[in-house]
Image (tube, rainbow, N blue to C red):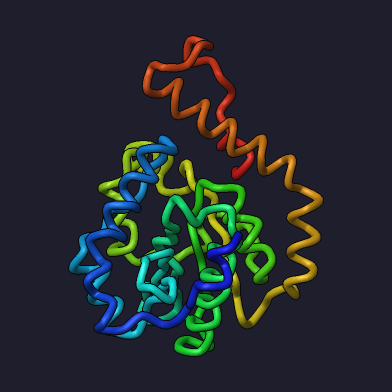
Length: 231
């Protein structure tokens, strides 16, 4: 992609706060287009992450916004999450998402070297990127038990599913990097590639489950639940 050569990926600062509304609007629009849920964030929240030096932004040399991701801290720093990854539509499938994920991961390791880094995603592409950084798929029980984190899911369209499952699983797949006990990125990447068909099928099942739950499925609600794979 020609624009790829003109993209700068860096830690966001106070000069980038004017992008906050554009970023949160795109987060919401993208989630609606995919039919998935996200924990909504306000422009003020995103701007604060920029001011704290806990966000990565991608822009062109002419000042066009390209992508964004930020860090959240949970359980008094025991866990951190790389959240809100979003790329402007015209720059998708260019490889910039992978570059942003790598930079926010490195920033997290710099700021929180002893923290476990986790993420929740409904996308196979993000799972692949995470696996290349050393993340592994895990059960929800291995994530933070910080109530404020789970409260952030209340604005997600799938929150009722999360609660009905006792916060043990939901439409998202959980992935974790533990600095004290982890495989090398090469190993997690190879493992993901071996199981990619299984993950793809699981994500497809999750979407069918959601449609059946909302009365939009074509199997009378009899679709086998994908959540049995997590138990």
